[in-house]
Image 1 (cartoon, rainbow, N blue to C red):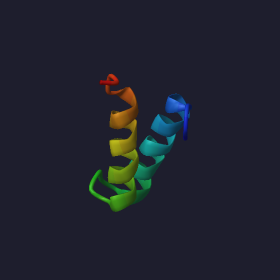
Image 2 (spheres, helix red, strand yellow):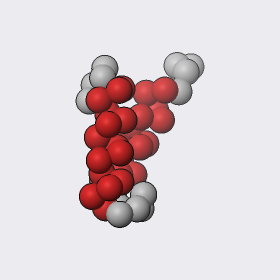
Image 3 (tube, helix red, strand yellow):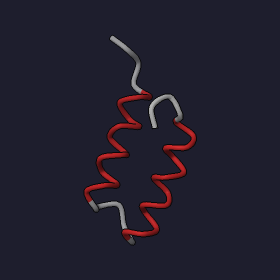
Image 4 (cartoon, rainbow, N blue to C red):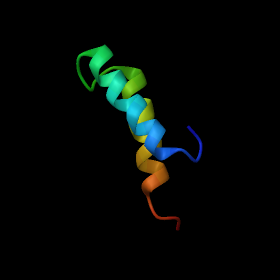
Length: 42
């Protein structure tokens, strides 16, 4: 979802519904990528 944070968040919500929680590996991977994208560059 490089450069498409809104699309990534939609996928994240879909993963949460599919997994039934926020603990599945794919959810964690995408959530981490979104957090890194939102973090200010240092």
